[in-house]
Image (cartoon, rainbow, N blue to C red; front, side):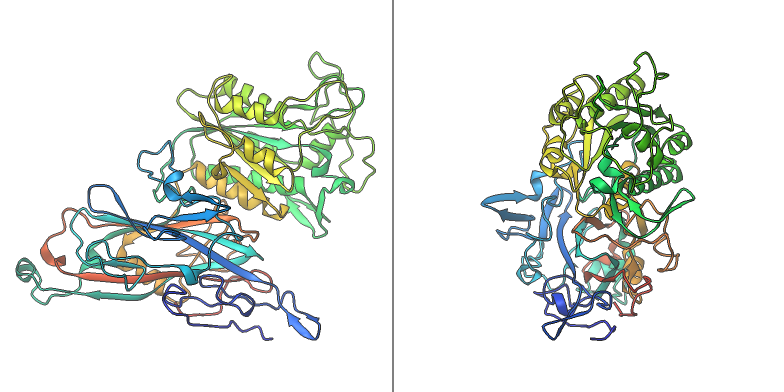
Length: 576
């Protein structure tokens, strides 16, 4: 086996115009998938087994003739009507099942329950029919009779399975024609030149909520509610996730723990909000369990809400020590009126992840953490701002060794979403190899029921924690625009060289058009099927004249990926 990428051109029905490359270990399973497999080569039964790299893609394409969205094509589309849909365990999920209730322009969202196990192969994909002519589409996107005011959009959901990888977006098979030379066009375009791509305005962006709509920014009040239980730090309880060293806030640790990744992710979260001048008010809550002598659970507010994000950043520094103070330290007689409260700042805990943790406080009181965060939103939240609680945990909620009972985490989340007490709060959850069923049941929009997968992040590998916080940061501000220009120029960028390099963590500041693909701020997309969405929208302005009458345009879109390991993101120079 060599380190050269393997290229396989597939038919239009199996792949988007054969874009990208398919690795030997996954041929036919992913759109534009490729790999350098030199990271995990071993001989098994006298044959070489390579690490897998599968990129699965789904999409929804719509067209607006001026009277609302028309479904053009989708994948998967189990009934062939152009609307994304899939049957899973006898239940049909559809694009229109997931509209953004807070966005009047949203008519649905790419199905959030799609993953590496249930996305059908691209051999089953169809390009649909031209909404104007009714004929089968020759390319993924095509225009045959565009009128001023017409618009459209396509959102791709990207699911990189197994190993992390770098991704590029590409365009190919761009074909443009002057078409029928109508009499009004003759008066302004005697040569019948193809003018359509240059006349259409286009936007390429990361559609963070996958709803086919570009979202601007609104004021948001945010609580970060973090698991401070021993399993986030101590190796004895699974806190050490890698023997690789990690650098956090100038500190270098010889091993990587879950709480290190939380510190890295939350501080990147804040850095991105600051860089975008986000209108946010942020606080931090924490929850652990209780010691045998405690009569109160060890939960509380690490940082009251403030618009000064540098203060929040300071509160999130040194989380190893602060967690250890809560879970391994003794009660602090100087905290408030209660002698049995452990303070994150009292310095009496042992932060060594390999120390004996037999005597730490036990239990995971997720519900109390959610209640504390909700009280903080009620006390220090701003009128008119959206309320959001981001809850991260790696375990099931359960009693510790003390004398108190824990409150139901799902009950606490239900109360927060229902404004009991006020305010009504969106509850986002991050499950780090813990109780997925509990954290999914907690997740949902303000005023809605729980169990909404669009608000739930299931992290199989703790190394993905920073990427999840990056995605959530990107959902807090205006969605990141990669390029806004004429469609002609956007397609030129996508068709140039390897295409446009995409960033797997939008919280790291990377310029896709101007920065080097190997820039350290460009991160690989994480494996384990974490869902990312990228979108292209277009509109023909009303002021466009007769020069585009009869013009036609078609093009294909696709993606290329290569493994992160043993690659630097420069790409193998596979032409788009």
